[in-house]
Image (cartoon, rainbow, N blue to C red):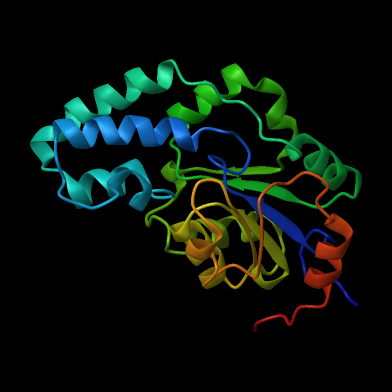
Length: 224
């Protein structure tokens, strides 16, 4: 099958960060639950409902502008003490993608300041990514597909030949809307919450069959 990309790659992989690459979502749930107790939103299961969305979107949607400064302060204080433990199977999969010369992009709702903290904790993780798409590069938050469309473009591959790895309902929705093949990872939410927009669902990236995934991507129809 012929190439359709600008860099010679037939496929690309696009990874969310929190809950997919690093085990941080449970920590964020604690943080946002605490903020919601101080400044009640009245939204049921608030901390999980906002998974995958940018801080800008969360603040503008759920909180009065007069509260933003204090919420950001609380979040910054929390993040300074966070642990960014890499999830099982991640480094093996990323290493294999590097060997195969498959473009890899991170597409995260985190801002540049959060990424600086991540690299301080996990400096070696950066080497596996050809591109990093952060909230500061997007105008619209997930479930809008903008971030994944940017990631696909940077990789030089049609979105339909990209695999998106996501753990939140907003994230799998964004990947699906971009036209990508979506791998849902449970843990942040149950499988049922991902099923509508995920093409396949697993509970870990350990022993992930990347060869089978690449075969699927190379045979997907290319949208015009």
